[in-house]
Length: 116
Image (cartoon, rainbow, N blue to C red):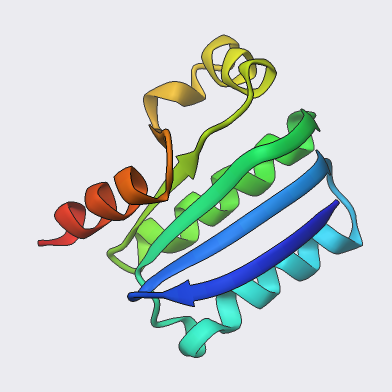
């Protein structure tokens, strides 16, 4: 899995590519996200549009990120998961805890409204 992290307008964008499965790269991604402004960033958008596959450990990574942001009073949204990832979220009932946005603009709008 590859990832890019970008802080834009007080929102941390994490753009994932490849397969979202547990490993050193996913642990490093979580640590890199945590280090952004010393853990003071409250809003996060995870772009899943280029994720081909996700297993249960990948779902755990998303839940871990969501928990980190909500524990500090923030919020996380998923951007454009593929049909395969959407089905996994529905089957596991994680669609009830994650908000899904179709693009960066909708994600930013939802996140900004969620804390004000």
